[in-house]
Image (cartoon, rainbow, N blue to C red; front, top):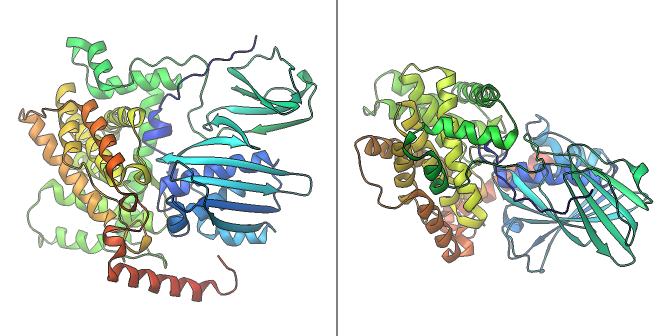
Length: 521
């Protein structure tokens, strides 16, 4: 029998918090746009000749889509590439070479979400329409197809079938939804595999493949979705936070404990490789900052920096990861690309200082991931919605819990550290200099990691956070509703509109124009 239930979008540590593995300056721009492009490509059966992309004038994308990677990601997705494909920086040129005509327009349409993509797609046989939003950290949601409101987060095999109005189906699936559309209807079938066309008297059928690493499935039951529920469930057991994270992700992804830990170890290894490549040196023409982490490493080794202990190694690793991101190298959005360095930089640097192995690093990252689950479930990681408190604040909170985990601290100490770290970053705006996700993003990542270390030590010493973590998250969400649009990653406020920032942006645009020649990328 068909099912008509509408399950809650249950956050996964590997889908929503620690990931995706990607290239590009911004996960909410580049990685999410790529996933939207992949679904759009499937909607057109892999054949696209023309694309019109429309951005609402009051959203974040008209001023950021080119410099923060939306174009790069969307084009890569339309070409069928992965988020860590080394060709991504050349996706505009590749789109042109593939014979796909492109137009990008700014329109007055009043989209409620600042990261809304409206795509009109054509090939020789058909024209189709797709609207989607980027919700932060690489996550996205399709909100309409062909003018029909629906929901699609990329976790299912989606079979879309246009049939005569009123037709019903007995197909087995996780969810079947009927969308009336004039004299016909769209049947949306979500499942672990595609539905067969043989079961329908249909006019048209489309198959959209999942784009998330952890698929969705029917009747997912997780043990808790917020900190209060977790504490109530665990009671006086005082289970370490990383073990509670494993329990959560086992239920969400249908994994074994070993599979969850091994997945995170694989991510740790990617991050350590990226840190090493960042320190060795990176370059990319369209960036604000040059390679700086190598000089910091030299000064640290020579003893010519102020004695910061492990903090200096943390600063080095954070800087290295940010430079890899800015050179289009491989990074992990943890929880976002703009805030990709604070958590892993703090964890890996501190673990190496303590002579801990990669499994212990992975357990710390899992503890951080669970804090991220609580944030993503209640709110967002998207700076376009919440300012940098949503990115840097979340990263600091997650990193504080991770550092407690490295020391063998308790569940309650980890939660206290997470709460204190988030509290001190409420109201942080997002104002990228020259419209690039480099500065003050670098400083904010360093601040987030330093804040995490301080709050971890405070929690170990028994400092009282006063405000429970869930309430801090709600407070940040409330602050975001009062934050001017210009301070939420639009490049229309703060440092982004200083004379120096605008001059740097002009110089970069001039360099790009000269290097691109006639390719119009």
